[in-house]
Image (cartoon, rainbow, N blue to C red; front, side, top):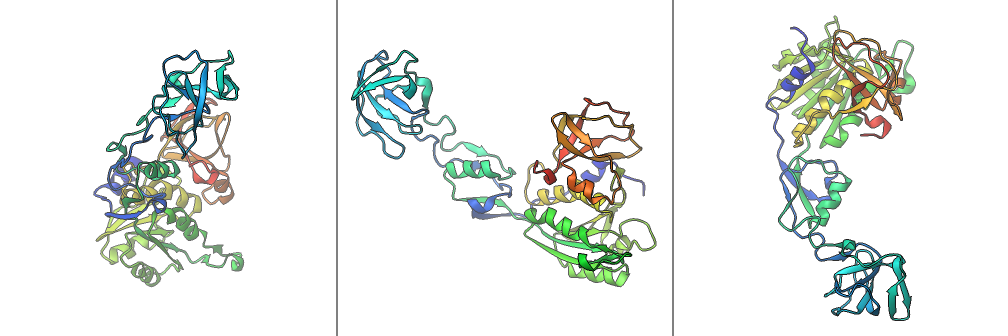
Length: 398
């Protein structure tokens, strides 16, 4: 089987994937989830005209003053009367505009002596300082589309629109299996010929916010019996993510183990660097993504394939990796025959590629804030050239 392009592999991954259904949760519990239906406002925001500034509210006629201050409108404590020309009320930012008021004089533009109010020559009353009823949204309007991810701002909008609960997509269950004779579960007990089983923990950390539950299985020895047992223990998880054993070496047993269990292997090589030995298989409702064993390759392919799969199952409208255009902060040599993803840090000059490119170098991965994406056969690039970049959570960016 020849290597697939990234786009073809992603198309095969997402082909036929449908959201797992929806559930109603408290709005505060919806953080990180995806809306299962368009969200309609149940109230108008603002519900009435409000002052956008601290100052004085007065009628729209007779804006030259002077005025007599007849009361105050504070947030939560509106002025109960109605204004006529020549009257004003002290008003706070966000407070209800009194009946009859049509303009606001900024506090710093006012001269007040007792109840007598006049202009100080620095400015005049204006309706521009009024937040009009419904300027943000009106009851019945769609404020968020289906498939929108609920972040902090979306959560605040949903609450302001009158929602205490939200219909969100169900999250998939995930089983994570890392395999390899050299792996040990206790990092403090790794000998010279061994490695701490960090891939499983890394992948679990990446997927936890998108999964209903995550089960860690392994590390699993390089034997058919051990691998079959781990896959059996994964049960009916919606997604199984394996790490290691997906290539073509004598001890790479993930593909034959899946085939023995009756899974249909869709592909197992993608033309990307790092991450060529990547596998996709399906058995019933379970999707299996076989990641490479090298940690950087596992991380990058999880970003490219596992996370979009989980987002799609959870109901995201656009599950694929998001990229942005950014200038290069340093030159880069011409690319190789595969599409490349270079670890990078971000500074005022743009994306600066990290020199270390070995797919086992975790320190460089932990330093990286982004991946620079370079097409196959890309010519040499100069500092300042525009490239596509995927921001990573490592640097607190995404």
